[in-house]
Every structure is written in C-alpha cells, then in structure tokens.
Image (cartoon, rainbow, N blue to C red):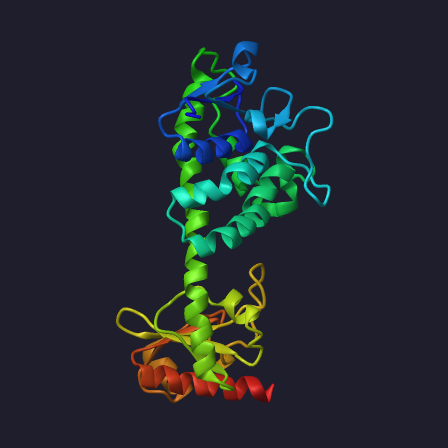
Length: 307
C-alpha cells in the first residue's frame, strides 16, 4: 500500500510527534504531512499513517495514539509516546533507509530505543520531569524542540504549522546524528577489540585513530587497561578511560605534576622530549611523536600503579 499522508494533530507540537514525523517522512518522502483534528483525517483509511492523535492504537490500521484509556505500555510497564510506538513499528525500516548495515540494525534499534526514544516517551507522558536533568533541564531535547513553537501571542492561523515544519529539519538532524553515532560505535568496536587482542596484558591500548572506545573496552572486560593512545593529524594523544558515559571519573588520571603544562614546561616535568600538552583535568595529554607518547604513557601507568 502506498502511503500518501502522514497525519498528526494540529495546534502546538511536542517532541514525540515531531520526531515521529522525522522517521515517517524518511520512509515516505512523497507523503503529505497533515496536521488536523478533523475526524475525517484522524480516522484510519487507505494511504495514511495516523500518530499522536485518533484515540486508538492499532498498527494493522496504521494508527498510533497513546492518549486513550488502555494505551499500550512497554513490556516493563513504562509508557509509550507516539515516538516510541512509531519507532517500534518503523524504526528498523528507518535504519535501513539511512543505510545502516544489516548486522548493525537490531543492536542500534535497541540502543536508540533505550537511550533516545524512551526518555522522550517518559517526558511526554509525565513519567519523569525535565528537572531530573538538574541545571541542564532547559537543554534536554524535548525542551529544546518545543522551544521552537511560536510565541503564545502569535495568533496567526498558520503559526503552529509553520513552526512545526521549521522545527522538522532540526529534529531530523538530532535523530540522524544519534543513529550515525551508534553506527560509528559499532564500527569502532571491532577495531578496539582487535587492538585489545594485540595489547595482551599491557596497560596501554594503541588505536590507529581517534574513535569511541570506552564502551568497547568495557564490553570486552579489559579491566586491566588504563590509558589509550592514538595518532592525530600531526601529533599523538594519550587519553584516560572514563568509568562510565555519565562521569568524568577515570580508571587512572595522568600525573598531577603534568596538569595544565605545555611545551618546555611539560617536557621538564615529564622528562619526555616532545611532550606538548596536558589538560588541567588530566584526562588527555599530547606529544609530537609516537615514541614520545609511549614514554608518557609508560610514566602515567607507573604512577597509577603506585597509588
């Protein structure tokens, strides 16, 4: 069946139907987006997908609302918004449309559902408040997207629709960037696993370039690793390994004596010719050559093991 219309509600918009439209419009780029509460539009019919409106959930009839009594819940009892329902039904097709490798689609779909889709669902249903983000509450994705709605006193008939369509490419950029990030992590994981095998029992992991590595190291159970080195454009970097994605705490910090130093001062403090920079927070250092960064890594490991 050819989808000719993507139907959601008119008026002010929220992140869930905006993000749902991102997914559906990628799959059905020729379909017209209709924002309406007219019964003639929000009743299931041939050629249309209805979401966040219609008071029913019936994937077989392409209607995906979550506001009605008895709305669908996840297996763990947490609520869906329209985004979660659309992601469950169309997310795999969306990943295929973006060119994600077949073998990566299922894990990326699952990771996106937990890390990206579920928070939208919970906030839209009032199951959590943006305030859980503390001082960053105003920077959560739902708040940022909904800040693109027209001002309360803009009463022009087309204001909401114009704002919705203006917000759509911005929302699209966030969704596609998240997918690309997960795809990149999957590509990097294979490289990291090979590097771990080569490192053996060593404490320093050498990678061929900068890439996401923390999750792959944790998944491999390589708890012995303390630092990562890799080349950059014209120099080499020495990085710590964070304990998790939501902390700055590392398995080991670079030596305190290096903190905030550059060039000659860092060479003097480290004893390594070619040392160029160490961040004041001691999570990255830079040297001009592989030989120099390996020397710095050996010194950092030795100090870390003494503590």
